[in-house]
Image (cartoon, rainbow, N blue to C red; front, side, top):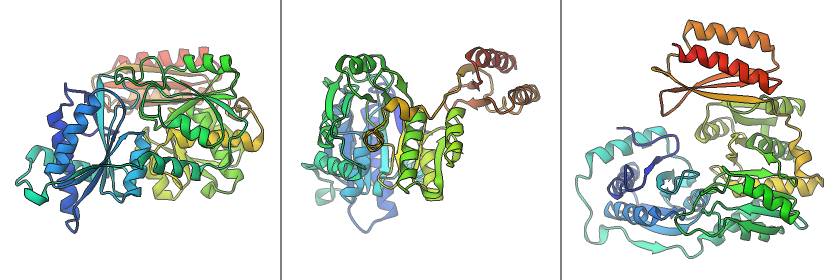
Length: 443
C-alpha cells in the first residue's frame, strides 16, 4: 500500500479519495500518535480550503480522529501554512489539512503535520499506511471518545504571527492579490492591509466550486491585467491553499519562484540573516538563478524536486531560506512549511526597504531560455543510466560548456522522463531538448 505521495494523500474526491478512506487515514494517524506517546490524550487541528468536497471530507476526518480517541480543534477555511502554524501554536499532536492545492475543484487531498507543525517523517507515514490496512483492534468508548470544538481565534493568531514576522511596514504600496477563490480569500487581503499596503483583491469570492478555475498562480494573465488597470506596484497570485505565491511586476511581467527566492535571499543577506550565506533550491531552478547567487557571494545548495526535500536540507544544515521555481518558499526562522503570504510580505518589504520596483529587484536573475519535454518510456528509472543517453548528455554538456545545462528527471508518478534543457537561446534549447527526447523515447 502506498497512500502518501510527495504532498500527502490526494485524489478525486468521492472517487478514489472517499470519506471512508479519509476516516481511515485520520483514525490511523491518531492511533499511531497514541502509540508513540500514550502519556496524554492527542489533540488534532483540522483545517481545509473552500472546495465543496472539503465539507464532506472534514466530517469524515473528524469522525476518524474522534473515534480513535483524539480531540479535534476545527479552524475552518484557512491556508495550509496556517494549519502548520496553528498545530504548533495550540500545542497539538497533529495537523490535518483538506486541500488539493492548485488542482481542479473535483480533486481533494489530506495533508498531515506532526507536532510543531512539521511534515511527517517517511517512517511515520509508512506506519499510518500499515495502520490503515490493519484497522483498529479496539475503539474507545464513553469518555474516551474524542471531543470537537471550534477555534475562535485561529485567523487572528495566524495573522499576528505573519505581521510579527514581516520585516517592515508596507505603507505606500499598492498590490493586487489573486486569491484563486481559495483559502487565502478572506485572509490574505486583510493581512496585507494590516501590513500597511493598499490592496485590490481579485478571485476572492469562493463558492466551493470555483477554486483555481482559471485564476490563481497557474493563470497569471488576469492578475497582470488587473495590475495594469489599477496602476498597482505589483500583483501577488496564490494557489488554492496559499502555500506558495508567484508575482507580476508593475508592467504585468511574471516574476517566478526563482526570482522571488533571489529577491528574498538578497534581502536576508543584507540584513545579516542568511545563515552561512547559503540558500536551498531544487534541481529545477534556472541556471540564471545560480549565476545571480554566485555574483552575490551566496552558495546554492541543490535538492531533488519537492518542498519536503528543501525542508529537509534547511533543517539538516540549519539554514534560513529555501524554495522552488513554483513559488514554494520556506523561511525556516518563521515557518515550518512553505507560506505564500509570508513570501509576499518579504518581497514587498524588500521593495519598501530599497525603494526599487519589483522589476528591478527580480532583474538580478537573467533567466536562461528553458525547454521541458515529457517523454513516455517503459522504465523511467533506467533511462539516465543507459549508455546512449549518458553519451548524448555528455556531448551536449561539453558543447554548452557552462552556458546552459541538461537535466533528465524521472516522473514521481508516471512512466515519464522529463527532459529539461537550458541554453543561451530558445531555439538552441528547443533543438537540444528535441534531440535528447528522441533518443530517450527510442529506448
